[in-house]
Image (cartoon, rainbow, N blue to C red; front, side, top):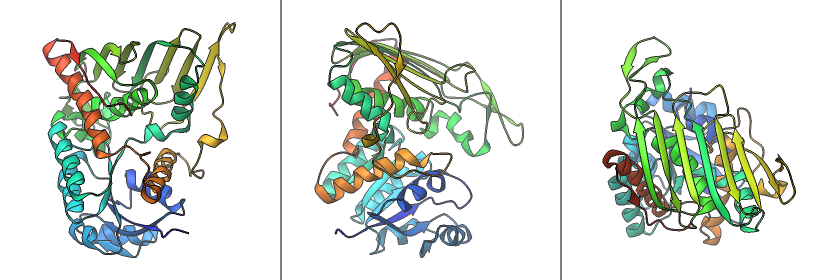
Length: 371
């Protein structure tokens, strides 16, 4: 038997948020972890969170949490602009970190956090949990096993759900490009990471972006605010394997299919769909056809790809629990199953290449690191 990993969560709002909806249920379902501390920005909310989630140590500041001897792993679930400060504090205290994606507000911050994790020789894991999804791992394996033969091309269309005509007040900050939590970095970033996890990295790409909705309204008040980050992103290029790739992400919600990803090969085809364009959040379905098949048929994901317990509705915790299951193996066995801060640098470099291609109109070469 191995000892439990003591977890401290920064940003454990008792009323809403990714910690309450995903991280806490996921951690409570897994025997390798024990949530020992929480922190929020206010004493009353910290105490309310501790009472609600049954956590003994509650702080109104992150410093006490990261230095507490019972905390082995610091989980950071706050907004992107605060990641650098909090990750730096945890790493400096010698604590392992699980930070939500995007890791940094841009590539420079991400490089700095990855450098510090290496310098302190501690584990830094980033929340690119789509690559822990059962369907993604199944697709990765069936491609490697030759189900569709040589990959010729792939097309991906997704809806960001946010970045539409109406946005909740708590998410309004995502419409401001300065905050680093954009259509490009969040839903497209998560999903393109899953694409590269299955098919390999980009070799070259071109991109076009547009802000088609100049304003949006706050759902609770109707107040209009400016949209300063693109709500339309188009990418085309070649993967390192030579396959052609085309990606289009749009803000808001479509009345059609909100995630449609097809992979076409010399021997067959695969199709992955979901109700939303966040591959890290929504249940993914897989269909395929090969050889003499004249159409696609459902390919149920085998049970062995589900290595974490079922999670309560609406299910946002499931892929996070899958990721924590891998983190426990990395912790105890020294494997590299979870994406690290160095992997995050690789993915941020791809996003930077997309932005550069869109701003300059020039094709970008991307030398990524195979996952």
